[in-house]
Image 1 (cartoon, rainbow, N blue to C red):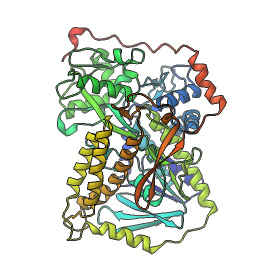
Image 2 (cartoon, rainbow, N blue to C red):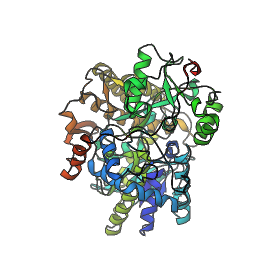
Image 3 (cartoon, helix red, strand yellow):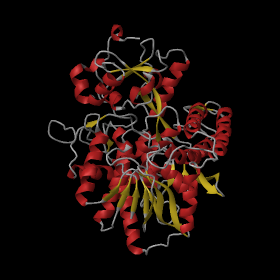
Image 4 (cartoon, helix red, strand yellow):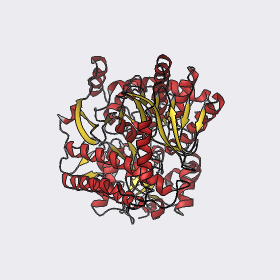
Amino acid sequence: MLVIGAGGAGMRAAIEAAAAGAQVAVVCKSLLGKAHTVMAEGGIAAALGNVDPDDNWQVHFQDTMRGGQLINNWRMAELHARESPERVYELETYGAIFDRTPDGRILQRAFGAHTYRRLCHVGDRTGLEMIRSLQDRIVQLGIEVHMEVTLTRLLKDGDRVIGAFGYNRVDGGFVAFKAKAVIIATGGWGRIYKVTSNSWEGTGDGVGMGFDAGAEVLDPEMVQFHPTGMVWPPGVRGILVTEAVRGEGGYLTNSEGKRFMLEYDPKKKELSSRDVVARSIYKEVQAGRGTEHGGANLDVRHLGADKIKKKLPSMYEQFLKLADVDITKDPMEVAPTIHYAMGGLRVEAETGATTLVGLYAAGEAAAGLHGANRLGGNSLSDLLVFGRRAGAAAGAYARDVGQGKIDERQIDQEQKILLLALSASGTENPYLLQQQLQQAMQDGAGLAREEKSLKACLDQILELRQRSARVHVPGSRKYNPGWHTARDLRFMLTVAEAIVRAAIERRESRGAHWRLDYLEKDPALGRVNFIAYNEGSQVKLKTRPVPEMPPELAKLFADAASTPPPSPPPAAKPPQPQQVRT
């Protein structure tokens, strides 16, 4: 069995499959332990009820569905809410260490749009702790890992996926993996945009490979803009400022020193959902109340230096080293940054099976759980819950099928695509095309969207697609990042086209999808998901009805409507007006 991706979802899937007796190989584009999961700093969302005893899976389920504006796959949201606590406790058996309550239980903090304090955390380094624990388990089980290998094509026997083909990033040597089942856990596609919290690996490879092979892509238009990324200096623009800063009591203020979230969401304030907070910052900047570099101030000074260094050590070090800002003395300057893809490969809730036989997906590469907007902390529990489920299902499938037959013509076709950029006939620079795509997506399909800008962006994507066929890279296949970029670019263009085509058709504002020309929700569009599919190497769109909740789950929302919401946890004492620096 082959697992593509070594983040939280990929490693958890590999662990589950290996425990069931499957022979597993894990392939990662970078190094083991350097997955983007480490950027999920704030915590793992799970209704343990350790801090707020009234919390339970039903409330977590409702929060997730409401955050996703009810276009989520309800069954995924139910499984996620039910199973997250067990997955967290299981992670402890792998060696994970969490912050603790005075009586020794896992400590939980508040996070945006969660009714209760629900995020299990290790300071602001939770993702790193998860990766460390899963990596130790991978090594303990003796699972085979291939690092610095990029896979670029799924291999098929008829309609069944039976492996993958690509190259070694060090020497450029071609590699092929034959497998009874393949799990895609390659993460998201944030690098399609200019300003993003994602690292260089996030170019949509897994979703692009799945799409090329015939798998369906669900909700591509739903791209999350995290409200708080670094703004200054330019070299660090977009780097994540964890939601844990607001979870611990940080305040957002504008250039006038005003705490503006009191107006945009008086109940949840800074802990409103990410789409609401991101739009609020955008509106403040557009109104002329932005900070010096076009953002907002995020202030934690009122928490005190000791608490800041204890609860937010990574943020303290990050701003001190990268921006020369001591957050115990000065506010952080932040602005929205591309952070997460709610869209991805369409999967079955119970198994992670895609619409292709033999192909599974989990984590950010899979869609359905988060709907139109992901709640903070749900990503890490998503990785654990559905990584495990995909691993178990793929392992069971692999036990019951024989080996497929590799079609050498598919390998020959992919080799020609990969080698094309090294031929002497091309004239286009892949780096420049990538930069132009990122700028086009930032401008035309960013936080605030409208028909004119989206259509202009689509025109640019189609032009760049044509130019990408004429890419030329000097040198050989050895240690050649330009050659790697040439293939990444093809995936980025495919995913970008799917995002923009779906964004044009969703003529409403819903969750992370904000249309300035359609500011209200459309009840009809709230009942459908958009699906991108491959027809003759063209990106086509169709819709499917949003899965309908069974009566017992739908009743939770009716009951909640007649029940007053719980009082929020006590906030830290606000700073005095004279303390706010503008």
